Image 1: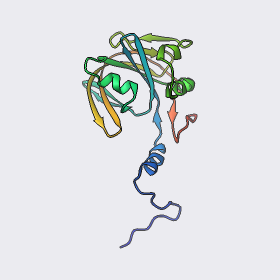
Image 2: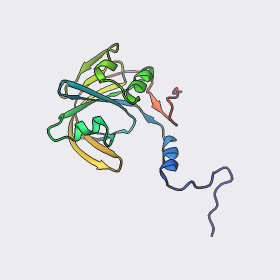
Image 3: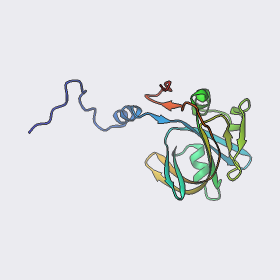
Image 4: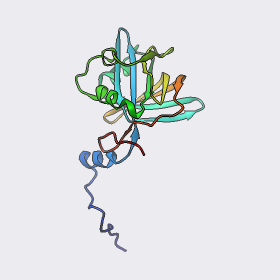
Length: 178
């Protein structure tokens, strides 16, 4: 028996980086800010590769681009012991763009006009007004291709909003939900 693609399905583009990038862009995901307090520096980046791992113990995973400043800080021996995650609300779209831009200044400067707090355990910045905030201790770090997987134990949930629309990334954009 020969398999045939449905008439409305495009032909296979293979599994190269471009085809995979296009395919994965079709997967909608929530958007977060991951922040790290590194001595006198505050580091932040937009991350859409975030997922809960376990409730007992409470673990989450973030995927950082290998070789990026945040990944280097987390992986460095004697580096920061934790990080903070803000799950962004739709109204915080501008923040996602600020922290995704190349050559950006430090996180404190990017949050100069934005209400924020520091995680009581990680010391990292947490933006207020998001869907939720998590203060985490780094449990493990594992290289995975061109990324670094970081598993964090959630030590505190400084806030969880009762209602707000999430910021979603889909096909390289932040579409409205609903």
